Length: 164
Image 1 (cartoon, rainbow, N blue to C red):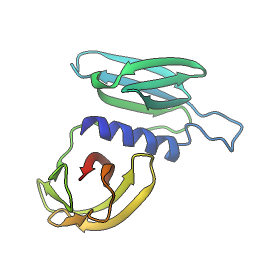
Image 2 (cartoon, rainbow, N blue to C red):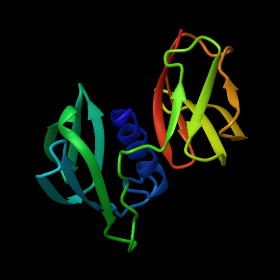
Image 3 (cartoon, helix red, strand yellow):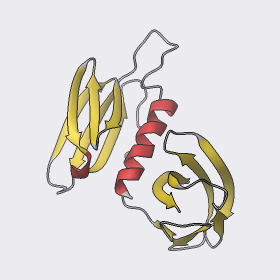
Image 4 (tube, one colour):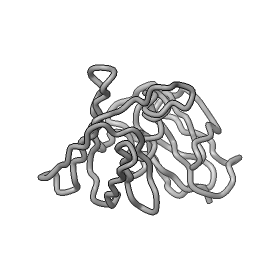
């Protein structure tokens, strides 16, 4: 669940924050702090022009200099844009639980309190497949999806689930 959140968050940031923008001449950069799973060590990477996941690794591109970090060691990523002040940091702890996972027809939610949420389901290549606003006391029908892995975004948190 933690890995999925980081994967989706990274993809979202690339689009929403224009870290890389092929239409523009300027390359925007972000400073990234990686907090490791032991939560006692972290690394600061300045001027990251692109970041992505490859073969179970987080890859940071600092103007052509690549840094590879095993994804299993990452606990939290903190991003700070060089163009905009105050990009929020995201902890990988999730207050909403989805079940059953894997599923064949419906996903249910458990939250500390009932709340209205915006739910989007994405394919692993980032294509939006389904979008709904709903209560955390309800469920979402995923029976029409093909077998495979998906990303479900609930408000600002992302999770991975399998469809059987």
